[in-house]
Image (cartoon, rainbow over all chains, first blue to last red; front, side, top):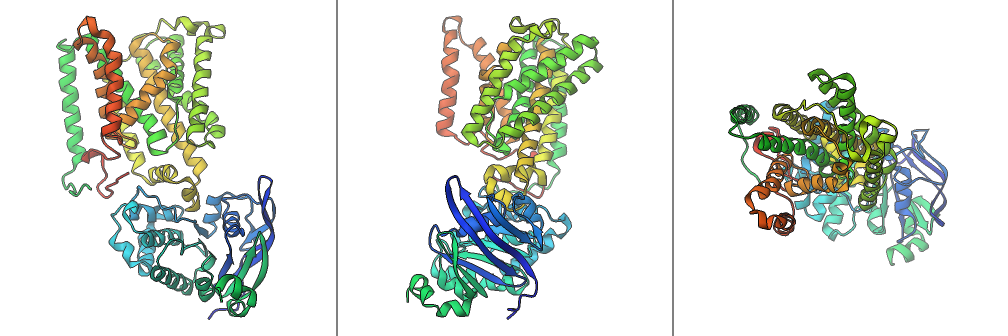
Length: 241
Length: 327
């Protein structure tokens, strides 16, 4: 396990996000190191998706700072952040339903040189062989699990250093959830760092190296996955033990 | 799903057919088998095609609902007419006028696009509608600033420099340019904005840039169409650029099918000829029924073919060899 995080990829300090008068995040701080899988867990409305959306530039933070590879990225537009090597697989997958699988993947590599697209696609198919069979199909004809795979594959097409996943397990059967999570570990082993937001704390704790627990817009607990699995608070609130 | 893949070069075949069709039409026109009235209708059909291709780029491909298309059409018409009237009528001033119409329409679209393209669907529709009404008022009162534009009485003295041949060439060019655009990676980016703006931003597409690009280019098409119209009809009245005219173009785009070049071309021609055809086909006593028949066509169409004639597909010869796209 590549646990020792020598380089910090993403560092978030005192991040505040408000939607109008409502404050969704009250100044949270966390880090993702090179090669890590980091998970944010928490209940509905804890601010998990807001955090990801702020990091990826889809939501404008009202305070704090976000650095990726040492550079400030808060306030930058989403597309510019993708170009730096930070991709988000959005909540609800959001594939381009009217387009074919191939077109979805090509769009994922929108900012990459055209010459490398087919090579990246071959690499992505190693993790998602099923998508290769579906290349010419419209995304609208895929099943829920396949759509999640497509969304992740599309994210990987940008060759990110860090990929953020928002609730990849949502709406999938237990077997599919296991499959998706083993692919996430696989992607991480191949060198992509992962920031994961999950309600399925059980699975999240299994794949993550480090975990932050979010409650009503604040980090209330953090540590290695092994530590948190033993924490009474996590056990009772998130693992149902 | 369309299964067959064409091996011949359908593009070349289509070009040959187009040239032959044009030659046939031109012969019929010069021998007066097609009389000047129908020649003008054919010209208007081609102009409608150019304008509607532009709106299809804005709405059908990029997903930005605009009700102000006729305003850009009007801007192109007046701008080009001012050029040919001030510089004197010739082929060169006509070309300059068309270019001016396209550029000015595009420039205005770019400038108003920046603030209003942040809006989504119905909000954008209202904003573009508002812009269209403002332009109509400006045309109505234009004589206060430039007397030559004639204000609400209309602009006269425009040389009839366009004919069917000009319109045909421009419609062909507009089709080829749009076709090459939408099947490029830029085209994919435009469609991704329509499909899901947030997801497009998440894969690294500058959605503001592409929305503005689609809108500006589409409105330039309207400008070109307006310029051709000014020199075919030789008279401009602000009445022809009000929002009902925008709806006309919208109808053609929707009836043809959003995101389909083939559909827009077929619908533009069919629609123009249907309207004029009814005028001839119906006996004088029931002429008023024209205004009932054509809305009925719309209602029936939307019930039975909501995706339009082509539902996002294309004629084989318009498709690139590799991508069989469905939308």
